[in-house]
Length: 111
Image 1: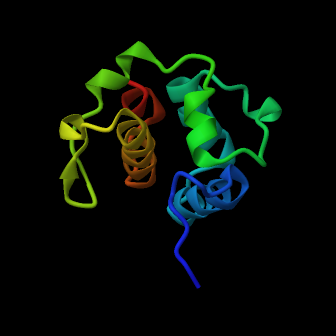
Image 2: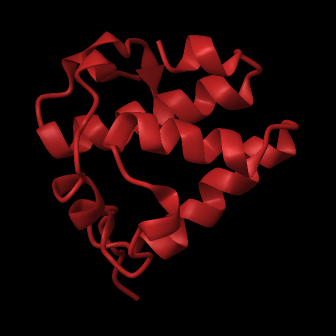
Image 3: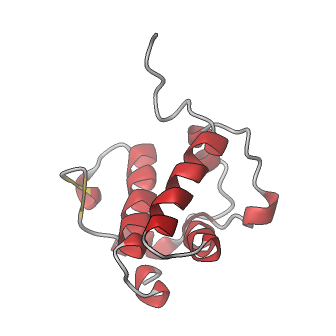
């Protein structure tokens, strides 16, 4: 079976994985939603769960200008050095979710 690109995956498949990660560490859906809303400008109650992950980021109402402050490694790659803008946005979200799961306070995660 061919592998599906992360860009082509449905948001409805990725969101539960993000939620599972933060809940395993004692964090909440509300905190995850706050992180996603901060980064993308989406109201999580209105997100089209059937859109691809690529469309999720490309159609985001407003990527937070402070996202440029997200630094550090995700999967061994410095997020600030990622050249592909879409992949960088995906990794920004991964980094924020990692920080949330590691116990950082929400106000520090949201910079």
